[in-house]
Amino acid sequence: MSCLVTGATGNVGSLVTQRLIDRGDRPCVFVRDPKKARELFGDRVEVRVGDLADISSALAGISDVFLLNSGPDLEVRDRAAAFSAKTAGVRHLVKLSTLDVSTGVGTGSWHARGEHAVRESGVSFTFIRSSAFMSNALSWADTIKSEGVLRTSTGNGKIAFIHPADIADVAVKALTTRAHDGEELVITGPQALTYGEMASRIGAVIGKTIRFEQISDEEARPNFDRAYADALVDIWRAIREDRLATVTDGVHKSSDANPSPSINGRKQTPEPSGVPARLEASEGSLHGVLPHRRGRNRGTPLRDAVHERFDHVRQDEQHPLRRCDAFEGLPKCPAKTQRAFG
Image (cartoon, rainbow, N blue to C red; front, top):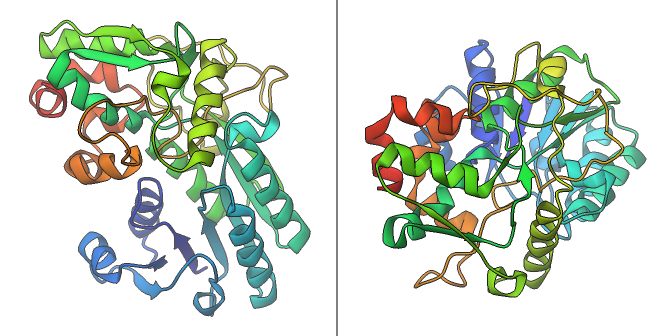
């Protein structure tokens, strides 16, 4: 088999790529920045350069594709990729989607259209419908450091963050075994927590009281692309209304591995496999449920700020904030926790 990984220098794509390398494979990575790909993977990958608007030139000799797109127009890129894959004889496409597909919350409608386009192409597929990433917590560092506060409009609602490595495990299983062809895999972290609960656990490790401050949706609304801002507010509202606390055992069933341990060491009883009737969750992407940040970086997309300011953590898979057991793991790594939040 020969896999093409899109988004290979990003949060999830880099882990998918590394897992394929660890299996003894030499995957192809489709990137815009070949230098960054070489810095991450050296000669252990084949680098193909281009834009996600057209991946056709990168499909020669490819049997399987990991597809990661974002934005309100992702349907266009998903469609182009899927039809190109079908034409090129690709046998299987694995798309990273979102739990929101089932409900239309946040970016759900974007990914629903993307999934529909993939189905129309006729290429064999697996959709990974993921909850939001644990590494989103890195975006809270500015106000925690400067003010000792975490501000969001999420109230006392809960969400089950998932570790990007768990997503990568599921993706690689789907890519390399064909065990989930034609399926929509619903995956979350093992426990849902409030933002206040998460903030208090960070504070306990760094020896600092961290307040949770509820703000309005309008106060929380970020000053960037309107479509993204509207999606984020929709997600925060759904969390506040306690509609996003769903937990499934999809990681275990889809990858033969248990999801990373819960924050307090206890696992929440999962709902039955498949899409629960009350399922509503956050966008499975880096900027899925990021709280608003006040101050000098206002107006900067938070996903970019996370990449720029915390890249040393993002690339360190053993850092506690890279895991869904992040807050349980923080006491074991006080120096790293202090570096991120102190």
